[in-house]
Image (cartoon, rainbow, N blue to C red; front, side, top):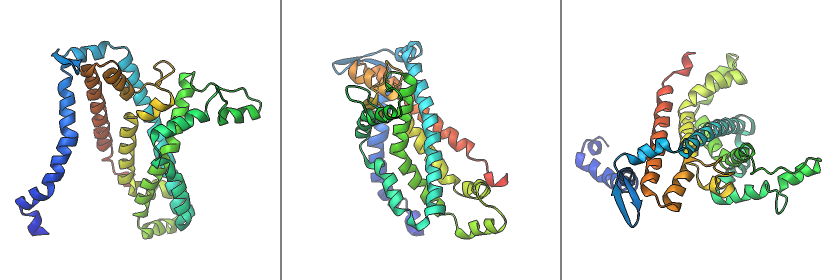
Length: 293
């Protein structure tokens, strides 16, 4: 193994194909999109405009609203996903133990469903017309009037969060469950002998030892929710009005509906910077050693 790792030619042969594919699939489109930020036009032709697209970004009243919605949605969804996923993983490990296989499978099942299908499903569940959806039917059964969930920005946002949690909690539960399994049983037993039980055990033993996978889950969640698109498009279409329009959907409409590829690429560049800064911030704040508290 040392001979292979010390051979630059062998390293180039082993890593070259993967780096080439990564460059073609990831880096080239990113650089191409960034280049388009200095142009305006459509597939019929482009005109160099310099920084005009960035000037339009600061003058556009819809862009800040889309950015704010994306950040708000990401913060709330990430906290909810990680909290619920971590609670489920603790339930799997310390309550169900070896009997958790069936429950893990059932909870994970929504993850494999197409996001558009999930969006259409929840649209029917919370429907008020032309047919009363199951949620409103339950409310009617308790003597409560039907709620038009998608006519108000707040209620529409709540439905989006509920849909996202139902679809993704199984993934984060399994991811964090795998991290908890790596914690040595001897460490947990020693902590219990020393009197650490319940939330004290979780706070001072489980969380610090599972911090690497926990941080990975936070990064996955935050970046995924920042880039939410198809589920929102299927569920609310960005409405009412533009109240639930994330930056991705606004970018899509700008680029493909209005054929403004330059400004759409500028919005994509902003989204890329947001994801990069979030990842960088999480890594920077994760350097604290929780075991020292």
